[in-house]
Image (cartoon, rainbow, N blue to C red; front, side, top):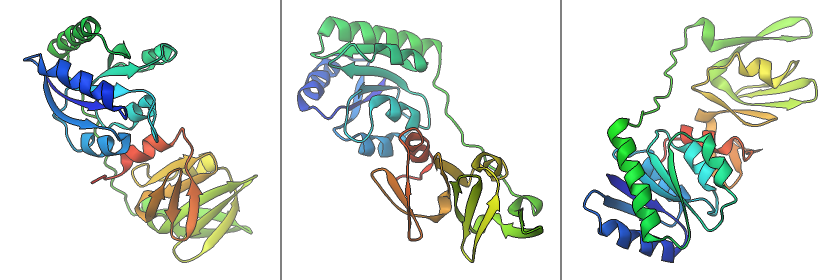
Length: 239
């Protein structure tokens, strides 16, 4: 099985490297001390069978990391604490849970489980839905002062909810209308737009920059919620 290690601590990585080298059925392709760099690599490589993943890391915790993956390799979680064990049941592709310091017998047991699962099932690649907009689907009509105003959907930069109103900001003009973010979200193509915060929807093609927990759309800095960040990272074409 091809595998990678994602852990910001050097000693656990060294222990895993040595344990992996002792097995003929494991091939270590990469090791990472950065979850972001690991995600960039993994979302462009579909040849990984198994990830040894630390739960507590800067930027992403292990569970957010799994949500941001665009396919389902097997995961062996690594942690210094048992407190995360209940979260494991949320994910079908978590094979085992190793406590630090990693012991050889526990490692061997985890690999046996991973090998059995690989023989029984193959990880499914999650394919993003491709949407082709017809002429009717490329425009949106909003009610402003008893007039129906036509807006070209590709030109929408972002949408913000404020109370009972939504602010639609386009390349040419800004609009305010009485509605909810949920209602307009249902009218937008999911392949182009993403809700990154409870109050904001953004056009993914309008992103200028992303830093920490915010995204730059034009000159607007939009917050990214912790809940929505994995989905955003999954949708980006990372290099």
